[in-house]
Length: 90
Image 1 (cartoon, rainbow, N blue to C red):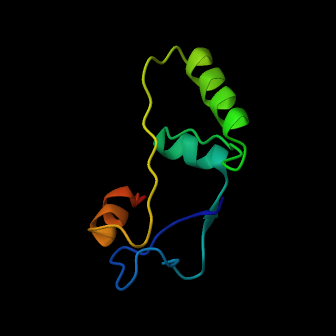
Image 2 (image 1 turned 90 degrees about the horizontal axis):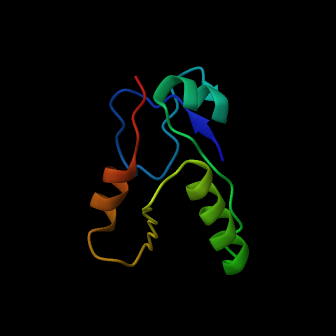
């Protein structure tokens, strides 16, 4: 996963990198410190391993619900959904 500081007013395809110049990359730990977002790595090709990992994270953090977003390019309103999922760090 790559995390970077996004340019203030991105133009064009939001799926492409919109780095500030010079590029400023963040680690997962820096992202958590700056925003409170915690990231977890899961193997999406192994459904059982993914379910176990998600269950373990939910149990560790005492969560009772979860959301999974799957975006496909050919879905309706793809651009709006990508825009909604984009996090702008300031």
